[in-house]
Length: 160
Image 1 (cartoon, rainbow, N blue to C red):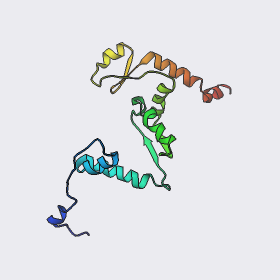
Image 2: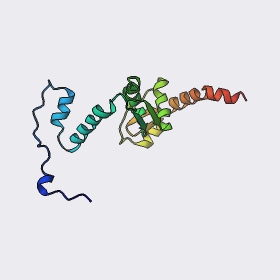
Image 3: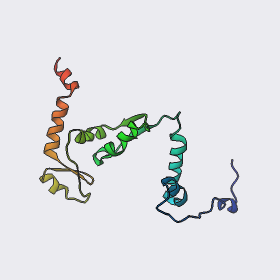
Image 4: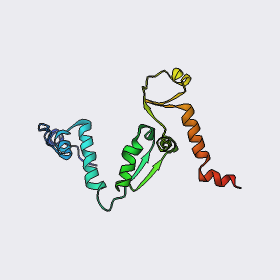
């Protein structure tokens, strides 16, 4: 069993001694010198882990996607560029992310809305809400249905 640390040992970590943020700092310098405590420090630790371990040549990186990430546009803005640029080697996703990502693949519009919107009024107007994202029910449902109905997997199963 490890010995308990004395009070002096518990307060003998690196001093919190921030420098002024300037517009000339690199992102790495900003994280290293300004993110010294609380969640900023946790973000700094994550950045260091990423730079030191995850960017190593012999590292394999996988990601697991859950929650409504793709309706918010994270597929096109973050996930695809990470994969295309070699930062992610494999991915596992819920069906919901794949399903909702077809909105963008089919050119369907997603809109910023409000999480406090009246769901009854939205439903009467034919609008679906995913937290603070809105989209039209009838067009999305019909276009996606037609897309999946024409998929090669369905064409093959109908040929039996």
